[in-house]
Image 1: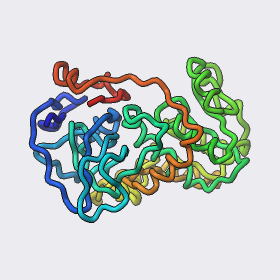
Image 2: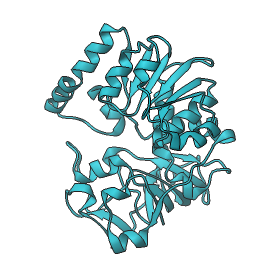
Image 3: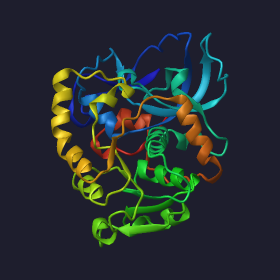
Length: 326
C-alpha cells in the first residue's frame, strides 16, 4: 500500500514522501480502515519535525486524524462492524493516518452520522473533538454567552456549531469574508477584527466564557475581559499533556510553566479560571460531539489534494488545512 512517511526530522514537511509499505498487523483491540480522507493539520507538521520524548516508528506514517471505512475488526472490538463509516483522532505517541490503509485502536474511533460525507469527515475529527472537549470544560448552560476567537477557522467553526447546539449565545472574532457562512451557522454577533478590537468593544464581565484559539496578545486581552472561565489552545498546562500520549521530561515541564507564568498570574489577579486545552484520542467523546451537532451540521467547502498529487509534488507548509483524499 502507499503511505506518506517521515524519512527523518525535517522542517515544513521537507522529509515526507510517498512510499510503498506493507500493511500493519491487526491487534485484537484494533480496526483496519480503508482510508478516504485526512486533514493536514499544523500539529502534523510539528510532529514531523520531531517532538520531545516521542519515539518514532520506522517507517513512520504521518497524520493524526482522518476518516474511512472499516475493513476488518479485532477479536475484542464490539462497537464497530465491517463497512461502518468512521472517523478518529490519534495520540501524539501513536500517529499514522496518511496511508491507503491503517490500523487504529477502536477506542479512538466514532461512527459517522449518515448526513456527513466521509470525504469531508477526514477534516473534521481533530477540530470537532478539540472544540467539544474545550467547551465541555467551561461547564456552561443554555443562555450563557461565549466569545470564540478565530471562529471562522477549523476549530473555531466547529466550536460555533457545538456552542449553538448547547444553546449558548455566541460572539466571534472573524473578518467580513466569512460573515455569510457564520450567519448560516447561527452566530449571534461577529466582531470584525480588521476594524474593531474585541477588548475595546466588549466590557469586562459581558461574556461568561471565552474560547481562545489564537494565543499571545489575544489571550492576555481576553483575560482582561474577566470571564468566569477561559479555555485556550495556546495556554500549555504540562499536567495535561498525558492526554495526548506525551510524558514530558522534568526540564520541559519546568520550561513550559515558566513560559506560561505571565498568563497564569494575570488570570489569578482577575479571578479567571484559565484552562489549557490538550486534545487526546477519545472515541466516546468524539461520538458525543457528532451526535450533538448532527441534525444542524453545516459543512464548509474544503481545499483538497490527492495522494497522487503528494507523490508527484511532495508536501509543503502551503498544504496546511487541506483535506488529503485517498
